[in-house]
Length: 123
Image 1 (tube, rainbow, N blue to C red):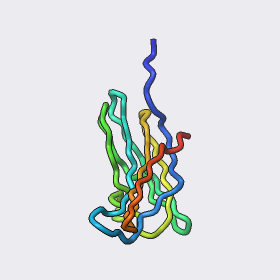
Image 2 (image 1 turned 90 degrees about the horizontal axis):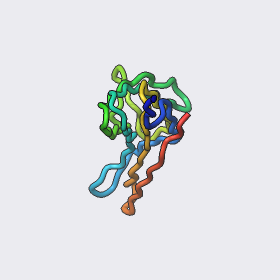
Image 3 (image 1 turned 180 degrees about the horizontal axis):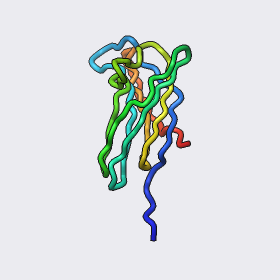
Image 4 (image 1 turned 60 degrees about the vertical axis):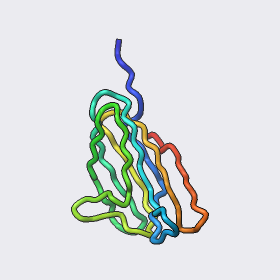
């Protein structure tokens, strides 16, 4: 009997934005939260798309089996290129194994900070 794996292999997050300023103690940030419920290690390729410039493609991230990983978007880098602050972007996550992808944003640009989290769109 085949074993069903948890998750999908292709996810999209259409709204990303790293604010240039933060207030208070906590820094504004965004994270791609990935859960690998399966036994096999997952190899991710992350693509970042912009409105007015070429994408940053094939950023590689590995996640061991039966683990979770929180990937700060401000730390993603490919060949020295990073996501700039104050620029809208979108995210595509592709994986060789099914995973679950959630997107979280902590906005501390005002004293009354906001936390938003949502499941990414599985393709």
